[in-house]
Length: 224
Length: 224
DNA sequence: TTTACAGGGGGTACTGAGTGCCATAACGTC
DNA sequence: GACGTTATGGCACTCAGTACCCCCTGTAAA
Image (tube, rainbow over all chains, first blue to last red; front, side, top):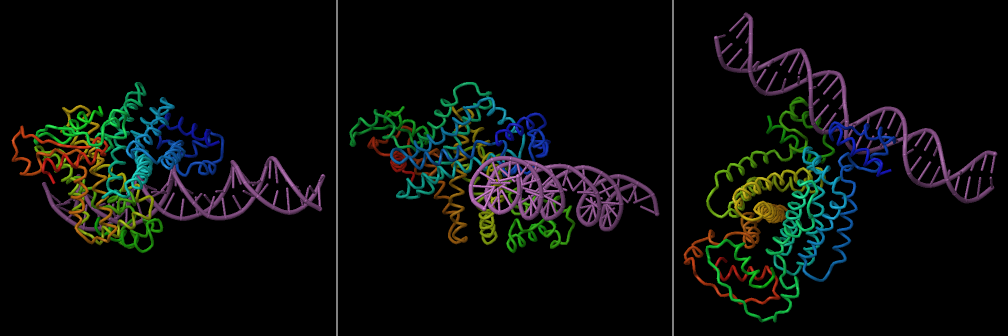
């Protein structure tokens, strides 16, 4: 029944637009009572994102289970869970994206959804960074950066109509975040192979922008 | 008149709560017609944030004028504009914060406001990073990080009841972002004094997390 | 077969936000 | 004083969301 309502709603939204479609229209097409719609969806907007609730639950479960390893890597993997939800139905995701873009109310709603993912990630990182100075700050900044990188790649994939490799695009975007904040040692065997006291000599110009310095550090550490 | 309405609305929101206050209540207290309320505020939520519109205009103007210098520094300064708006009326800001925290609808609305700041910053950075590889990605990630850092400091200042130095707290939070993505040379005379080809030798363990590496780089460059 | 009970769904009426339209008053111009 | 312009009030309407009640169905006990 939830499924029937969601499909009827989405069809109508595509045909007439979101705001031109009333809940009465939806329940008329679905052949159910108006009251039932609000039993399954708290608001009209929720019918556009019927799968985010369970995806958020998935992410929460994943992060609850994750414990060892690089915290940044963990939230990057968490972001990939969301990506896979989108990538499962490319046509639907692309149509929904276009719909969301042209309806301000849906953009705002989507924002609140994204925020819940971000809060979940930040909560996990806060726990992992509990012993760090400014752990809470670091957690929120990293969560925001991961979400921004994920969304950048996701949206460019959606704009392309769902062609291309969404996973690869997101991986590439998250790379930028990991380069800034991730832990190098947890990344791969190349880094793990070195001794603790291995010495790296780096030559760098003081006028270079910091991100270039970071790039140099990466390549010096062999993480590329 | 806008002022009268905003004050009447805010008083009532504090007395009875946001959802328990109808627009009719507000216009009754303000002594104006119901229609006039919606002339000045597109929605009930807007009456809670009467100053964000002009603040956003300020930020846009500031970033339009900013051209030289470190782009990250520019958006950090842009974030400080918002902070100063909050710091101008600490009591009001604190009361509004508490109100916003307990009303989901206001949280969502605030989110959309914050998003507009973030988009403004990202747009500016996109222009500055036009020649960079992944410039758009970098712009959005940095904007998100700056906003997250700013909000972290701002909220902790608001939670404290408006005591303490909000500017200092935000400066400290933004430091974390600048450390990751800013350009070192634009920071101060200490860095500018060095020759372009000055050599820094850094010793670092491969097992250290990346943020610690970055810290080492900073102190080696004398940016602390 | 009848009665008691429980639960999912439908229907009705209501509140309240937001909009469109028109009337009216204030103000300045000619 | 006639006229256009602008700000405000009033009225009626749409529609999302909610509270309340009813009905239908399936199940178990008498």
